[in-house]
Structure formats: C-alpha cells, structure tokens
Amino acid sequence: MPQWTLVTGANRGLGLEFVRQSLASGAHVVAACRQPGRATALNALAGEYPGRLRLLPLDVTDARSRDELVRELPLAVGDDGRIDRLINNAGVLHSGERFGHLAAATLDDSLQTNVVGPLLLTQALAPWLVDGARVANLSSTLGSIASTVRFGTPSYAISKAALNMATVQLACALADRGIVVVALHPGWVRTDMGGEQADLDPAQAVAGLLARIDALGGGDSGRFLDADGRVLPW
Ligand SMILES: NC(=O)c1ccc[n+]([C@@H]2O[C@H](COP(=O)([O-])OP(=O)(O)OC[C@H]3O[C@@H](n4cnc5c(N)ncnc54)[C@H](OP(=O)(O)O)[C@@H]3O)[C@@H](O)[C@H]2O)c1
Image 1 (cartoon, rainbow, N blue to C red):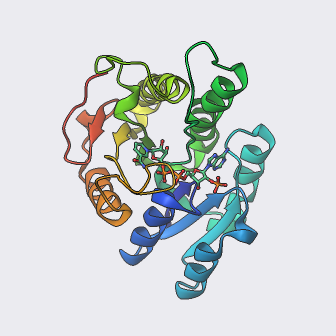
Image 2 (image 1 turned 120 degrees about the vertical axis):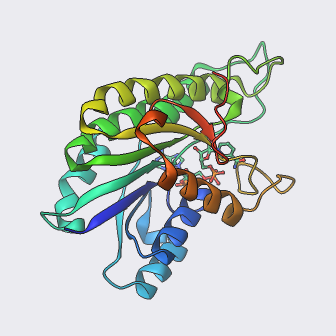
C-alpha cells in the first residue's frame, strides 16, 4: 500500500523544499497549493518523478476547496493510498501592523490561514491518515506567549499561538490511533516570508525538520519543538 506525504502551500518557500526533499528520499508526495497550473517548479518536479508527485488545488481558508481536495484524493493516491506524513505548511504573515491601526480583516485572514485551515484540513483528512502517521504544523516562536516581550506582528503571533493549541487538541483527538501531532518551529529561514537576512536557507531548514519528523516518538505528540528536538515554551 503506497504511503504519501501531503504538503500544503507546496509551490514556494519551505513547502516547495519539503516536496523536493521528500521526493529525493523516495516518498510519494501530494503537493497542494492555490494555483497548481502556475506552480512551475512543482510541475517540473512532476516530470522528474513520474507517478510519485501529484498536484492538487487547495486554498486552506476555503471550506469548499478543502472538501474538494478530500474528494480528489483517491484519484491522486489510489483507493488504497494513505497519508503517513501531513505537513501543514501554508501560512501567512501580514507585516507592518501598528498598534492603533489593527484591522479585523488582517486578524481574520491570519486566523483562517494559520489556524482554522490546518485544523479543519487535518480533521477532514483524518480518515486518510495511517495509524501512526505524523502531522507537522509549521508554527513559530513568534507564537510563544511565554517568550513575547514586545509588540510585533500581532495577527501572526496570535494565530501561531492558537495553532499551538490546535496542535494539542489534534494530538489528543488522534492519540488512540498512534498519530503524532506536533508544532514545529523551522528557525528563521530565507523565504519570501523570512526575508533575505534570515539565518537558514530552506534546504538546511527542511532537512532538519524532516529528520525531526521521522524521529518523532509517541511521547512527542502535542509538543512544540524546534528542528533539534528542543521543547519550546508555550
Ligand atoms: N520563513 C521563516 O523564517 C518562518 C519562520 C517560522 C515559521 N514559518 C512558517 O513556515 C511556513 C512556511 O513559511 P515560508 O517561509 O515558506 O512562507 P512563504 O515563503 O511566504 O510561503 C507561504 C506559502 O503558503 C501558501 N499559502 C498562503 N496562504 C494560503 C492559503 N490560503 N491556501 C493555501 N496556501 C497558502 C503560499 O501560497 P501562494 O504562493 O499561493 O501565496 C506559499 O506557498 C509558514 O507556516 C510560516 O508561518 C516560517
């Protein structure tokens, strides 16, 4: 029975690198992104790895799009295909927020993209996860309540704090199937979101994260970790 890695926000940044490295290590991959037709790098990879990469459309904020992905999954992975790694990577950071000018739309979009989307997608995909699967939610130390000492990117920070709680809720909900759910901080990475000054290139960051995901044990479920396996403060 083929087992698949499913990556959201797979067309650029860390998501694209998750796809690349998963394919290189022999995995079958479902790459979900908003506009697969425009995802040039993903389409090139599909040519390089015939039969091992499927592209599906997904806007994580859109209930119909999430439902459609679940409906199309059997066509992509086969009736007996299952997911053994779900990487909830899609995320958004609205920069430039200033106190006194916070906007409901920015908060709402951050919550829909960074929390509601991954939580409800994981719920919808639960029947497709193998027992013992790994679910990795891409979080951030900016969502650490204990570490926050200054005002900055509040919509993002609030949404990642909420994603951490969603991670613990999912870990509890899926525990009886041995499914391990974690919130992972990738480090500060040179992507469109991280910017050019960031510490890590995507290849380094994703190599560490994939190694961490593969090394997870049952006792790790519900934890907030970095790529070295350090437990981060809530
Ligand atoms: N880079 C860092 O330093 C850093 C640090 C901590 C945590 N993270 C987290 O790591 C994850 C990946 O970050 P990144 O640096 O690769 O970000 P990025 O370069 O900005 O890429 C974001 C990805 O998410 C997708 N996305 C955004 N909204 C979406 C939606 N509604 N539906 C589906 N896909 C959507 C984007 O697709 P489009 O191309 O369609 O917009 C894109 O593929 C995020 O969750 C981020 O919060 C990153």
